[in-house]
Length: 639
Image 1 (tube, one colour):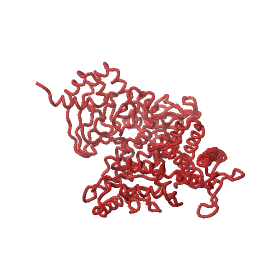
Image 2 (cartoon, helix red, strand yellow; image 1 turned 90 degrees about the vertical axis):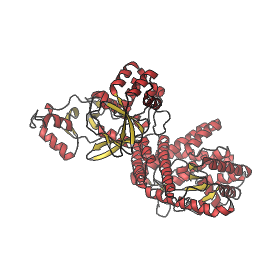
Image 3 (cartoon, helix red, strand yellow; image 1 turned 180 degrees about the horizontal axis):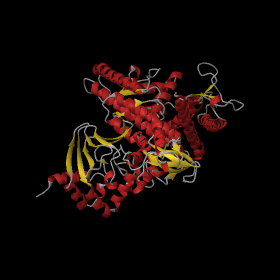
Image 4 (spheres, helix red, strand yellow; image 1 turned 45 degrees about the horizontal axis):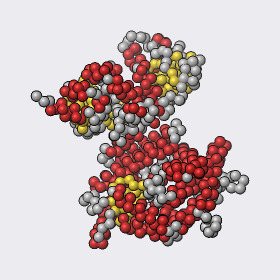
C-alpha cells in the first residue's frame, strides 16, 4: 500500500537543501518518518536554554522567528519560512538551544529525526559538507539557489562566494572588563554585576590568561562546589582562545562552535602572548545577525503595519554604520541598502493598496527618482518618486487619475512616517504633475527634450534617473523607448545636457584651495554633493545617454559600462568610478558622524589626509569635464 503522506513530504523536501543532495532511497526513508506538527501564532517550538528535542524542523508553511533573549530583551535573529531548517545544531552538538523558536504566524512544520540524518551524513559527503557550512556560517540555507530572501552561495562555490555578512570583520568590544589572577571570585562577580557584563577576563602583564563567564558562576559557585572567597584562578577557563583584530564573522562562529565557548579574546597579533585589545562574544554575533539584510527583508515581506517599516529602516541605519566602519566596499553597500529601500517602498505600496476601496482600475508603475532611482541613497533623505498609469479613455481619465493620486498620497505619507521626508519641491507621485498616464509622460519628456529650457534640463537630470520599483514594468519600458527616440530626434539636446554637466566646474580654486560657499546657512563649508558628486553623476548620465544605453541608472554601473564601450578611455572611466566610490563613502561617513545628509563639510574638521584624498578625486572631475567639452563641441558652439 502506498504511503501517500510520505510521498507528499518527499515531493516537498526534494526541493530544498540538504535534502536535494540525497539519494532517492535516503530521502524517502526520511519522509516516511517525518512528523507533521501544527503551531499556532506566538506558540513556541522550543525555548532558549531548553535541552534539544529528538527532532529538528523544516518549515512547510508559515513563518518561525528565531529569537535570542538578552537582558530580558528578545532580539529577532532570523525568520524561517518555507524550506528553512532550524533546531539542528543543538541536536548534533548535544547542547542546549541558543535561541527560542516562536511562530510568527500559523505554521506547519515537519519534524525530522536527527538519528536518521546522522546515518545519512556518514554516507553522504555532500550532506556532511552542507551541515558543516551551515554551522560555520550560522545560517539555515547556505546553498540556497533560488530563494531571493537568502543571500547565500551555491554549494559548488561555497569557499569562493560567501556572503559579505560572514566575511566582514567582526565588531568586538574594545573595552573588555578584566582583573588579575589574585582577585577573588566574589570581587570579580561584583565587578561583572557593576559593569553589567557576562564575562570577565583574567589578565597578567596585559595578556589574557583566563576568562570567567556567568555560566562559571552558576555551575561552580552557585552550586556550592567552590567557595566564592577563592581566587579567580580556581574557576577560570584557561588557556583562552585568541584571534587578531581582523577576525571575520565566519572565523568567530567556527571557533566558538569548535571550542564550545561563547567568548573570544582579541589581541594585537592574535596570539595569547600579545596585548589584549578586546573581547568578542556570542551576543555580538547575534546582534550582527539581527541586522542581516536577508533578515530585514524577510521582516518587510511579512510586515502588517508601517511601524515595522520604520523599525526596519532604523535597523538599516545601524547596518549601514557597521558596513562603513568596517570599510566594506561602497558598491556592495549601495546594492544592499537599495534592496532594503525598495523593499520598504514595495511594502508601503502594498499596505496602501490594501487600504483602497477597490483594486487599481488599470495597470500602473511606481518609479523612484534621483538618488534612490540611481540606487545611491544610503542616508535617509527626502523622497522623490512618480507614478505612471495605463492610458484610458477621456471619459475615464479624471476618475482614474483621482484613484492614483489618492493611492500616491497614502504611499508618500507612509514613506514619510518611515523617515523619508516629503520632498520640499513636491517631486512626488502625490503631486498631479508627477502622476500621469503613459501618453502624458511621453509628451512631458518629449517637451523637456525638444524645448529644453533651463528648468526642463534640470527636470531631465532628476527624472532621467528613474528606477522601476513596483507595478507593471512594461509601461516603464515603453516610456524608456519613447525617451530615447526623442533624444535621437533632437541631437542638440545632448549638447545642452553637456552644458548642464559643466555647471559645477573644478571643486578647487586657482591655488588648489577648496571652493566653499560664500554666504547663507553653509557659509565657508564645502558642498560635497554639488561640487564633487553631481559632476560625476551628470557626466555618467550624459555619456551613457549618448550611447543609447538603457537600464543603467547607477553611476558606478554607468562608468563600468562606458569602460566596455570606449576601451580607449578605460583609465579615465575607471578613475571616475573610483573617485565616485570614495566621495560617496566619505559623504555617508560624514552624514552618519554628524547625523545629517553629509552634503556640507566644514573644512576645519578635515585632516590633511582627508583633504588630500578628496583632492585626488577632483582630477577625475576635471578630466571627464574636459572630455565632455571636446566631445559635445561646447566651446565651439558657445555653450
